[in-house]
Image (cartoon, rainbow, N blue to C red):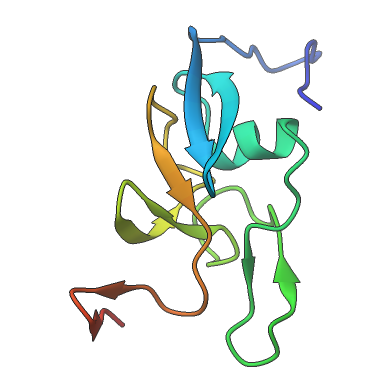
Length: 106
């Protein structure tokens, strides 16, 4: 599920790295967006809407919407479509707004 060849864009792959998604080991390439690595691994649902609990996936891919917000290394509301993947990251789904220390962060 990765674009290998594109007529205009050049995709440089970093080293293959491991990370965990909801407790499951996943592989990706260092520096690619977390959401792209998840998509390539077959993960299509990244979050759910707060009010109706509808699934949200890889949508804008430029950090403008909140469809890809996830908890990364314990930090909530990370826009995974623009956050570069690093070896050993812990990525978790989150429901609604993320909380820091029990206080809603917005």
